[in-house]
Image (cartoon, rainbow, N blue to C red):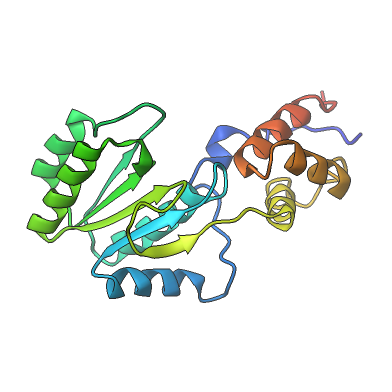
Length: 199
C-alpha cells in the first residue's frame, strides 16, 4: 500500500456539495438546465435518489445565478423538517431574494409548500428545489449516479495516485451502497484513514 502524508482527500470540506465540480452528462448540460429554468417561468426541480448529486448540481447552478446578479436564498432541509426555519423568513424579508432554492423540498408539509409557492408567486421570485421524486415542478435535471462518475471523483480527489482505490474496490463500494455516491465517499474516507502514513 502506498504511504499517505496529506489530509484525507475525502474529508467533508473536500466532498461537500459545491466543493467538487458537478459533472454534467452533456457538454452543454449547465446551459441547458439554466435555459429550462427560464423557459419554465423560473420554476424547476432537480430529482434523484439519495447521494446522486442533486445538492452538487444545485450548488453549481446557484453559483451561475449569483454571477448573473441573482440574489439567491438557499434553505437546506433535513429529515423531519416539515417547515422552513424561522430564519428563512427573516432572511427573505431582509435580503429580498430574486430566487429561492430549497434542498430537500420533499421534507416540507403541504402547508409549508403552499406558503412558499405563494411567497414566490406574489413576489415574482424564482423557485428551484431538489427532491427524491417529482413534486410537480418542471424538470431541470434528473440525477442518476454511475460507477464511472465515482471513479472519476475518486481519482480526481486522490490527485492521480489511486493505486489502492481499484475499479474492483470502487465497484464493490458502489454496489454496497446502492449507488449512493455520498456514502461511497464516506467509506473511501475510512479506507484512506486505514492506509499507512508517512512519518
